[in-house]
Structure formats: structure tokens, C-alpha cells
Image 1 (cartoon, rainbow, N blue to C red):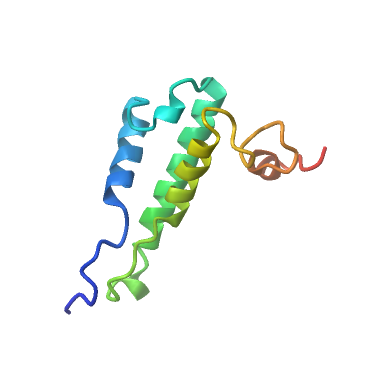
Image 2 (tube, rainbow, N blue to C red):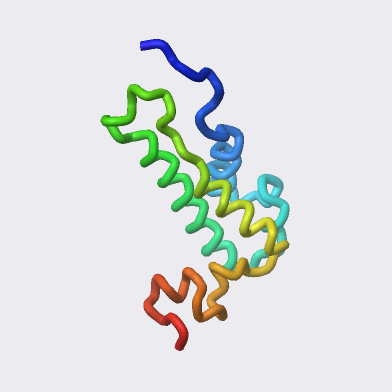
Length: 112
């Protein structure tokens, strides 16, 4: 089968940076992580893992493997973009002090 569009289907460099950060916790990959406290680092690591898992999962469906457009890195980009925009602080969706943030939604503590 010929590939219809030879352009990369995902940002391999970003996936490598995320993987390297997860292995080393070196803020050289994501400078905004330089001054994270332990809770922020844990939350960022979790978010990167979710983003990478979504990327991997998007490329594992047999039904789409022949189309050439199987990888989707939008969640990983969103994770990095959101944490970078927070500039070393908690992004609103991950801030444990935000009652409507993702952390509290997951833990079932919305609006408490």
C-alpha cells in the first residue's frame, strides 16, 4: 500500500522530549518545569504519560492502520501547551485548588 501523505503524522520530537523528561526529570526538555514542587512534578508527569498513552493508543487500532493517518498527538500538545502557559504555576485544569479542575473532577470533589 502506498502512503497517501508522506508528512509526519505526529510530532516525534515532542514525543521524544516527553519520554526523555519522564526518564530523567531534566527540565532542559521543558524549562517551565524548572521550579516545580513535588506535587506539580507528579501532576505534570501524569499528564505527559496520559498524552503519550493517547498517542500510542491512536496508532494501535487495526481498523485504521492502513489509512496512513493513525497517530494523533493533539492531547500531548495540549498538555505541554497548558503547562507552559502556566509558567511554572499550576494550569487551571490541573490546579488542586480549582474546584472545577481536572484533578478534582477525577477525584469526585467538584465544587466542594
